[in-house]
Amino acid sequence: MWPESSEQAKPLRTGLTTGSCATACSLAAARCLFSTAERANEVLESVSITLPTKRSLAPKEVSLSVSVEVLSEHSAKASTIKDAGDDPDVTHGATIFVEVTLIETPGIQFKAAKGVGTVTREGLALAVGEPAINPVPRQMITDHLTKLAQFHDYQGGFEVAVGVENGEAIALKTMNPKLGILGGLSILGTTGIVRPFSCSAWIASIHQGIDVAIANGVDHIAATTGNSSEQAIKAHYGLGEMALIEMGDFAGAVLKYLKQLDQTNAEKLTQVTICGGFGKITKLANGHMDLNSRVSSIDFPHIAEVAKRAGADEALQQQILDANTTIQALNLCTEAKIPLADAMCRLAYQKARHYVPEHIKLDVWAIDRKGNFVGSFLNDLSDENGEGEA
Image (cartoon, rainbow, N blue to C red; front, side, top):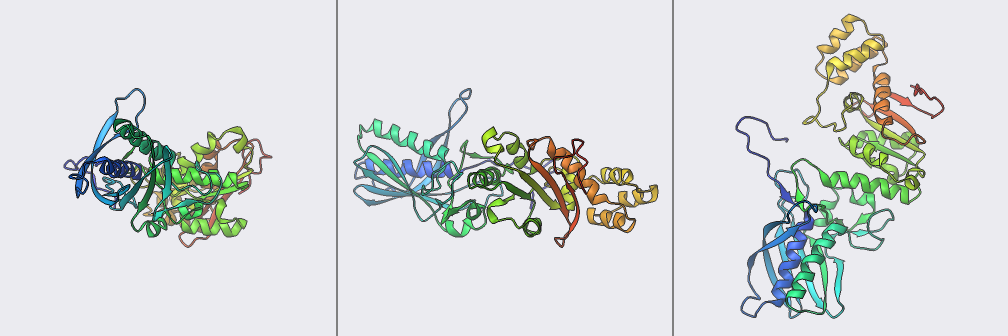
């Protein structure tokens, strides 16, 4: 449930990424190995880490409580519980752990412990076969362990195995399986901080999904708002799993990423399809890039205006203004033979067309609550005015 707003509402808490948690655990475990015998078996310690920041900002430090366990003379394990603040993050409350082993070879060797996935497809920032520990968390861990090694005049290296308790099950709630990250979660983070409702992990998965599709030769991708729209468009076009991008409410995350693709990757795409529930499509048609109800509301006056342009009389327009749901408004128009859904898909197309590279065919589809198509706008690139085919 989204938090209610009121004069007494407390500010939303920020949290820490899995990357920050893994960094703290790595540092705690390594410190334990360099500690005196009297301190080696400390049960709990507070570890401070430095978060990555822009050059214009001063480094920011945060402290995490970490449990430490000595495994052998050269190996230790540390764990912490992830606090995502007030963000609805599937990893909130998960136990992140790291086993650090001192090795002779200088540098850092990363491994996936239980609950962290392995990359199996091209297109991600990591090579196939690598543990799903993203570049920024790797750099954070490397920076902290390198500094510690220098302080202790240690010339060897570190093997860092990052895991998440119950990570395999939690990963099933994410897009990792579709991205080809198998066996568990990804260790994520670009700033070290989780900002409430930023849903940065979801947006990162959207971007990764597009990258993976392109890298594996998929030239037609479909961005959908949910399971029903995904299944409908998959069946209609006969698309494979890799072509399906679950954007949820984040239409902007898809469209803006497509706009900034480099020319080489953009040219590999020939078609982009957007499919969503009719209510979500009305929001996109109205220019909203975040389709969630906490950010954008259903605009019945806008729906009535679109219906008017499609031929609705004043009485029908008033009925739309008095409607409780978008489906009710749609049904009223369907009974009056007013192609409201097609008109909305056309408007949504026009908004999306500003972002999608001009050489790519773009089409927009709307479904009802049963997953049936109720409207569409198809553009074959032959019509310069974007009239398309409804």
